[in-house]
Image (cartoon, rainbow, N blue to C red; front, side, top):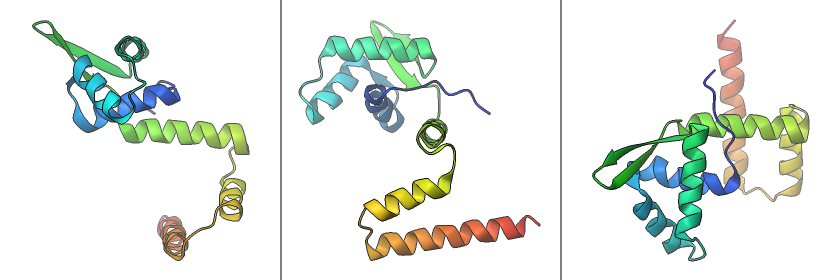
Length: 131
């Protein structure tokens, strides 16, 4: 399995920008983030970029005076690692109590219920196809 660094909630925001638009300069990332949330400070963004570089989540190349950042890990791998970590921490690794928790506490639309049924049905087919 690919080693995926642990990414904080705030770091996820920067990673989403890079997954969508890489390569990006720090200035481009700052501009994008401040358009959505004006409380972002350029020094904060640069500090998080440095942290993500040290973690190996992003890399950069220098072009003149610009540093262009790009993700070194795939979004799908980070989602997998984060969801597995959440499932382990909160539900002891068991999917059934997690699904029950969300289904019981969140009002699901008819469309969401149909989609869940479809996913479960497909998952069951995959299991029987393996044998």
